[in-house]
Structure formats: C-alpha cells, structure tokens
Length: 255
Image 1 (tube, rainbow, N blue to C red):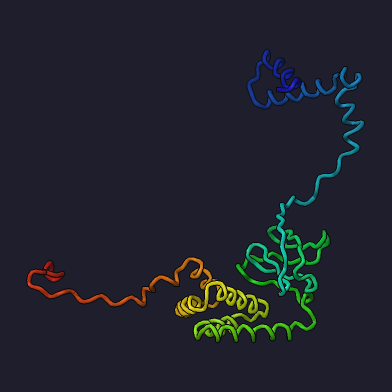
Image 2 (image 1 turned 120 degrees about the vertical axis):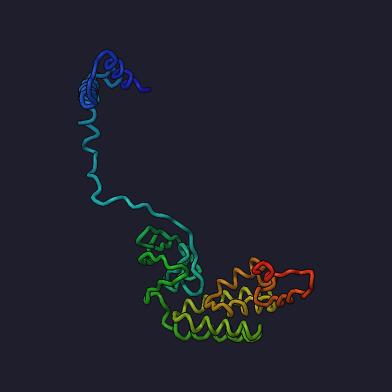
C-alpha cells in the first residue's frame, strides 16, 4: 500500500460515516489536503504545483472517437493478386503479387500495407472464402490472362477422369468471378497432384453426388480419408430374414 493511502486510512479510522457519500466527500478533502502539502522530496513543492506547472500543459484533449482495436497479419498475394484475411480474399495491386505485406483489419475495414505504405483498403466482408476485388487492381490484360489458365485446368481434369472433369466444369459454371474460378480450379488440381488421380476421382464423384460446387468438400474428404471408406449408398443391400418356424418375427407381437 502506498504512503498516501496509508496516510488517508489512518485519519479515516478515527472518524464515523453514516453514508457512502459522506465517506467519499471526506476522502476527497483528505486527497486535496495531501496534494497541497509541500514535499521535502520535491524541494518544498506540492504535488498540485507540479501538476499545474508540468503535467497540465502537456495534456491532450480526449479523443472524440472511440478506440477501435485492430489486428495484424502477414500476408503474401499469389498470382491472382489476392490475400486471405479471416477466410476472405481481398485484392491488392497486381504489380505487388508475391510481395510480402501486412494486413491491418478491424470489424469494418481491411487495409493492406507494403513497407508501411497503404496499397489497398476494402470494407470488411464476413463471407467465407468470398472475394472482394477493386477493379483498379486488375492488370490491363486481365481478361486474356484469366481465360488462358482455365484451359490448362480443364485439360488436367479430363486426364484425371470424367468425375474430375465434371467437377471442374461445375466450378467454372458456379463461380462468375474469374479470380475465384481460377483459384478453385487450381486448388482442385493441387489436390489431384497430392493425393493421386484415383482418390481424386472418387472424391469428385461423391462431391458431385451431393451437389457440391466447390473444391472444399473434396479437400475435406481427401484429408480425412473419407474417400477410402465405403459410401453408405454403395453398401450391399441386406439379405431378407430367414423364414423358419422357430423364428417368431415382428408379426408375432401383434396377435
């Protein structure tokens, strides 16, 4: 406990108070008296004098806006000049692809900084794995660039198998955003290269069966090995029960 607190408590110990307001008023009087006393350690100057002489002129106005905490994250855009922040993709100028950057974000804004210079600012989006793209960030030849890559993806999918080709086609038809289409197709191809054509075909077939339009379900199946397990729909039908005089069956209990 500090010396000032002990000094105040020593004086309050011998006094009686009937309400909290009386106690608080007395504490205020003692604090004012303590701060006005000259201090030998301070050269005979009181705390109030030092405050008025040194601290008060240095005070700044209270901010008019509330403090908003921000989070920081190191990011690096790929060839599609987008960075991932909290499961959403945001664009940066295409010339900065593959450069290391920092993302500064809060509940309403996402800012991308490159060597402490802000190069992109977007409204915060909470759409999982969606894309927010500033048209100014696109390269002049973006259309030709975007149309060139999907051709290679389709060729890979057709070599992998009919289910992979159908899944790739569904991805292209479902995503109207060129950048998202390219990224989803590339992700599917990377999984095929990692897990092999046979497993990718099985995963794509099952994803097509329940109407998937993204590579995400396929990724989960391959990572967790679900494609290696028998599918419930593919299980062999159970044989009918054996008819025997000694087996009563469910109808027995209805009589």
